[in-house]
Image 1 (cartoon, rainbow, N blue to C red):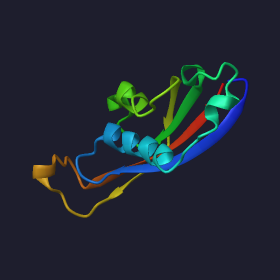
Image 2 (tube, rainbow, N blue to C red):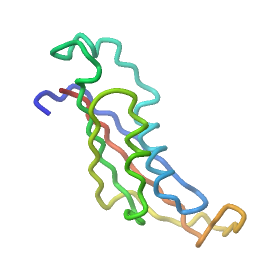
Image 3 (cartoon, rainbow, N blue to C red):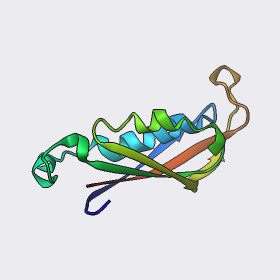
Amino acid sequence: MKKLLFIETGMGIDVHGQNVTKAAVRAVHNAIHFNSMPGIKELLPDQNLESMQVKIKLGVPSNQEQLDEEAVKAEIPYGQVTLEVQHGGLATTHGIVLEDKDDQNDLMLITVASVEVGY
């Protein structure tokens, strides 16, 4: 990315089920959901949203091998999306195991995301 224009951050949690993808998708959604970039097209060299480059950085506490990267990328509606996953976030107790919620243990997964936008 030659020019970095915006950085948005978010957090996502899967309280029950220990689903790292669900937590990651929620983190990216949280990062971009409360923002609007009405002038972004004018900032891109060719005024085309598909030429925008979006880099997602995720801090994932566990189960990285179970992450559905395409589901995470699908949260970004435009541009060329790349994903970088690193150890981070938090796995902490939710206090009760609910088998009907697919809990394997008493952990909730908290994932953090940074979404960089540029060209």
